[in-house]
Image 1 (cartoon, rainbow, N blue to C red):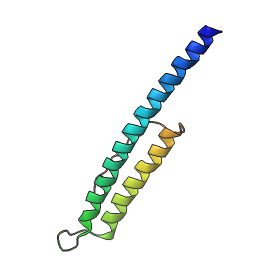
Image 2 (image 1 turned 135 degrees about the vertical axis):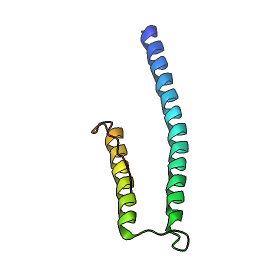
Image 3 (image 1 turned 30 degrees about the horizontal axis):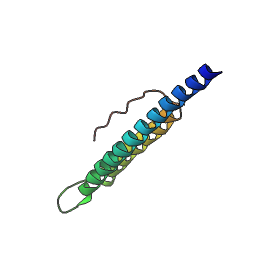
Amino acid sequence: MAQNARLKAVDEALDSSKRSKFVKLAGSRTVTAIKAIRVIAKLGNKSAYDYNEADVKKIASALSKEIEALKARMLSTGTKETIEFEL
């Protein structure tokens, strides 16, 4: 009985460690991704850049597809699909 309690405590410690690692990494990586999207959005300055609606749609589509791939992978319904992007 005591051995089962010890094993359970070890399992809980590992789960807690995995959770804290996930929370730390997910937080920092999400902030980095949001900053990257905001940098892309700065390309919307028409006085500095020349682009058209098709370019905007391609960028938005690529980002949306990547978000869908992220959801699928994290919910274990997808594969390690990579999406290539080029204007």
